[in-house]
Length: 398
Image 1 (tube, one colour):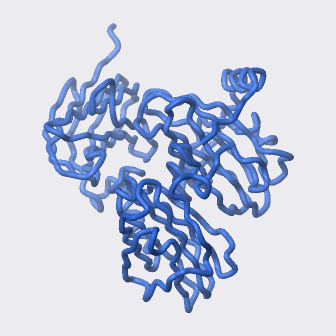
Image 2 (tube, rainbow, N blue to C red):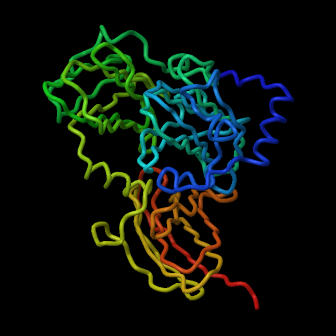
Image 3 (cartoon, rainbow, N blue to C red):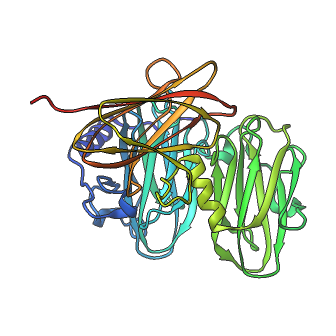
């Protein structure tokens, strides 16, 4: 992918804008947008529906944290959301609505480790959350605009492994609730028919292939796209019911066009979708017993726990009796590669980390107030193993 050729004056303006950002103060995107930055510099200039051109920011991601861009649409609008890391930066983007619900997530659909998503949005306020794939520091450019505006990235269709052909060549999928398996070389498009109004969930699985899926409507209009929803696998949760008709699913592979990809299409189940978010650590579980959370009690100074973990998150909670600094480490054994996330009891993310320093272990440090905090730990990729979870509390010297 060819990176954009920014003039020095443009970069200077972006840096100056980042130095004195227009921060959001309200409970935007369920709290995920608090402290976010309006992509146009202020709320009025961040209306993508009325914008004369795209809006752009330079984003600095440090310490495993996320950079959040805010924007509005004031009428139903087809938007394009992109992020391209500088140098070897590998971006991941999430799009949230004003209630904090995840609309889509993307890793590599921009081509060459850049992120890109095109979707139709109803009027409202939205948050685009940017993070680094490996949890390390990264500088990236963020661009949000309408689909007719100039793109920042090449896009998946121009990248190696892009889907070729058209929906007119689609292979019938079969009954909903079943699965099929084929390589992109054999079957780049599938078709399926809805006889009644219905929300759907579509998954594409084989991390060797690194699949990307794109859903088109009865008139081949673009509906949604996803890459890397769960590891390198892809998933679309279309919670808004689709009208009856024949739909087309485009499948591409970023790594291997000859590897078989298992496609599943079924009715969208909001309970299953929520459990999937808990299992991946995308959101914090409630402390009501509906999800297993081990209570570690009050953290006085230091506690240690050996945890068998897999690709689903194992959850813990601990209590802070007064303000202090929390340090949490996940130390792998053997070939394990632990991943960590910390939330407060209201579900606001405190920090997330995969690889700290030069190794595969994870670490999060955060200043916290009195309260209950939720810690999630899992294997970054497939496999099972033991992780040593260490939590320490430090208080200010008197």
